[in-house]
Length: 188
Image 1 (tube, rainbow, N blue to C red):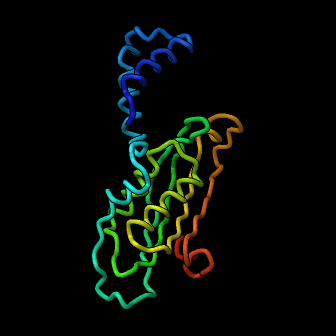
Image 2: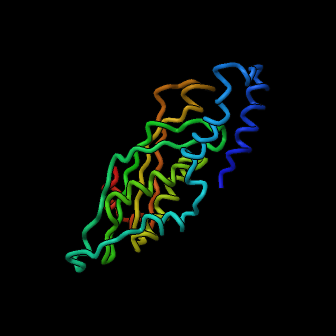
Image 3: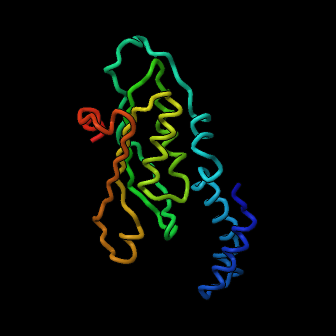
């Protein structure tokens, strides 16, 4: 669990380390605000992939379970995350998810909630795609999942190389998505 008291203590020390006075008017409540913000934006740290799958695993039976050629595709799910290397914001992230249902389908809002919660961790974009695919597979009961993520990383756009137009694209394919080009095309 996220320890907000420790965060407050360390944020106060960080402010001092950069030469700020944590007692000045504009900064007095900053450690508390940062602790609450981090507890919110890193909420996913409190859950394993399995727990997220259980939390958002509401499924419904398919009307025509014999239709094995169907796929569920959701595109442009917006999320943000924080890079575990610099704790820098990964932003303008869009996630496309597709899976082939096996008798049951996930509630559509659950797909977006899974993406959001998996992103609320210190992450690598590559791992985020794998986490989402793993959670969708468990929650839906289907091994056939594809995830495409496009995003910007402030560790590249705001510091270092400062290349504001750079986008990172990652693809994760599980089950039939590994070899079936038609399935892969669904998330592009």
